[in-house]
Amino acid sequence: MKTFIHFDKMHFYAYHGVNKQEQIVGNNYSIELMLSVPYEAAMRNDSLAHTVNYAAIYREVSAVMATPSHLLENVAGRIIMVLQSKFPSIKGGRIALYKETPPISGKIDKVGVVVEW
Image (cartoon, rainbow, N blue to C red; front, side, top):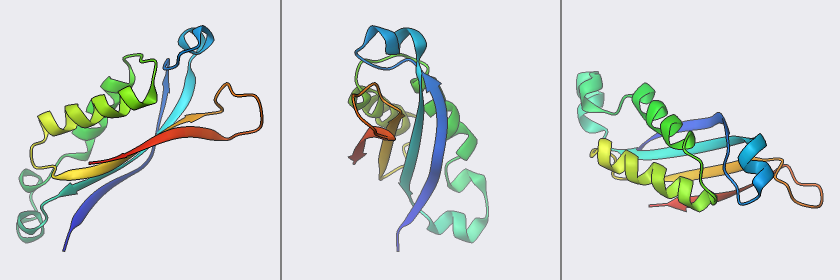
């Protein structure tokens, strides 16, 4: 059995993008995050000490989102590196990072990157 902690649609306003306007005006972003974590100890002991703290994960993701990047790939990679560094119990995961209403000619709701590790 595998256990995943799922963060569904975290929302941020940030200044990522290669266009100058995106860097000045900013845009809305959403993140879906699934983290693979060991489950046995947390299921037996009902203690936060045996899993990852959701609020701490959110704070780390928020801090990365606050630092502008040109590429979503860079942002997603930085989030993964921070989470792996600060939470060694995370064994892998999946991040989907979306830019809402991107500055693209045509009708599109969002564009993003998905990284599994």
